[in-house]
Image (cartoon, rainbow, N blue to C red):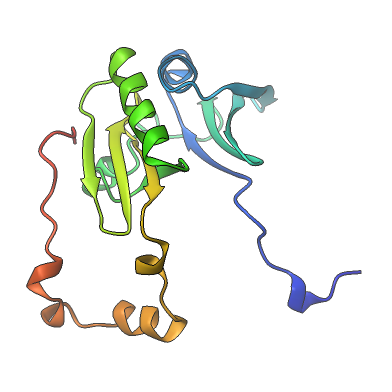
Length: 183
């Protein structure tokens, strides 16, 4: 039996979101982004149903979605997890790792050739990313780490920055919102 001090997450297994349109979700992730659909299941629950389906992000990590019907949801539920909660579209998002600039450029080219609109690129200093929004209103990012050393911090430094009062945040850290991503 494993010692409780060894109990911790090894990696992400899956993250799940709601969709009202599984076909559009499938077309976007599998067709436009090339992320394969690898598992789907359907279940009855009470007088309703739900289906749960998974896309393979690689390395044993999955992006999953639920289509639900009459299982306790509000009739007007929203799938746009950020803007639906009154937040900017970029707050809640899913980021996929790629391993090189070439892979990121290839994904950018693939997305454009597949008709993905509103692609926005950002160099964060320690990584370079491209962003778009999926059919459910969820921001999707592809990211390559460009400077692992710039990302590294001690826990103490990260905690100091986490607790820094807003009036002490440096002006040179300013990031303005992208105008090319829908909200």
